[in-house]
Image (tube, rainbow, N blue to C red; front, side, top):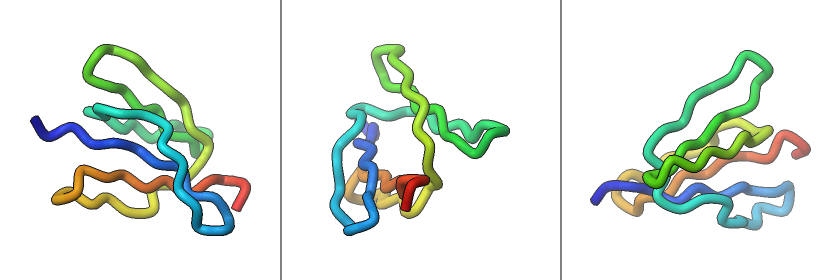
Amino acid sequence: MCESSAYLVNKKGEEEKIMDYVIDIVPNNDGSLTLSDLLGGTKIVNGRLKEVKLLNHKILIEDAAV
């Protein structure tokens, strides 16, 4: 399987896991991101894509409050 985990990165650089098994990331017109997981769950995150580590299955999203 190639699903990744998404992490929200705060202003201190600390990572908080916000979703497992992410299969889709869709940018929204308001600057947020909609994440979807393998089981059909969704989450809207106010942040920007910072880094995607494909080999490590890790998605880093910088918190919009940073």
